Length: 427
Image 1 (cartoon, one colour):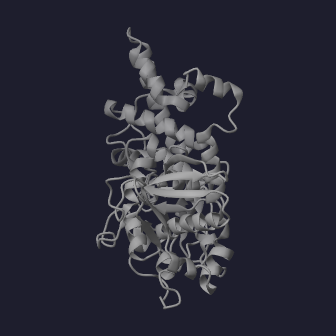
Image 2: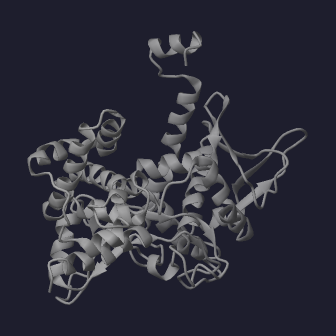
Image 3: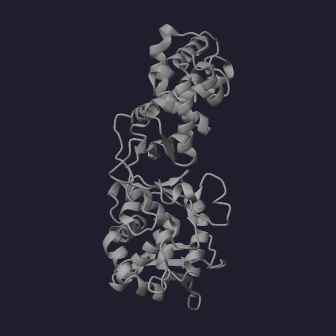
């Protein structure tokens, strides 16, 4: 076996982290190599049971640094190359080549090329500086690897800007590798243990309607996510646990992570309203279809009945996910994009009679609340187990987040300097 072959095998596993969010390895030698590369940037998977077989696969789940890495480079291939470049054996020949390019640029009359190179290198500039004594434009042992990931062998000029991005990203990644991440438990596919499913470090797929295509292809393959280590974004029309008359729509809610998340919000809204100490309003701006809204306004009401428009439904969801260190996969959309993506979720919640839409009174906007029949389900045996035992900390988190948002929008708690800047029109 050539020196390059183990690295080529590693490439295929690393690509899966950006496509599926999870990579699986059966060979222990390959697993050891990945363990070093992925320390601090991907979470190891807990075994499904305590009696793990020696032949059980090793698995890793993409974590925040890997999702951020993908935004720093142009392609999945460059992201994989950056991970490999954290290994000194891969990195050293590439640094020698870039050091040679820097020497070339420093000999030119125009300084723009040198400035551009150093700027592209970013945090890797110190690595290149240390490699200047051994600078050389020569072929490396990683020709096939380079053609696959960089588009050409590293010593050729077209690879230079790509290699600079890769080395810069690798230098940034190195700071995470000394702090291994906590192992992540598998998702409970029935949804009966939301405390396990909505833990720190979990990935949540972007919401998408189940039009039949999600099961056939694409990056969000449902059967690879539901019941594994990622929360699926597909909105299915059936529950993973048997639906009975007593359970009603609750079975469907538990089987669909996005439905559960928005149900927790509407449950928190109902619980807060019962105290008559303020609350959350979910209002629909005029001109929209309530069953397929592009944007739902979120207002927070204080105990004195003062309403503050804080933003949109997606804005609060983003705050919730950030507070629990749960990350949208494969990448975080803008708030406006997420509002649009959540349209099929809202439609499904209304169809399954979990949410209910109410028309506003004269010149008032329509609004969403929990469906009264579903609210009753939440206080029966299974509903109480979910919302008062395993999921209590989840729905309760929406209230302090909404209150903090309301204070931000109202200027409450701002220091005097910030208020002065705002009043003076500086901000």
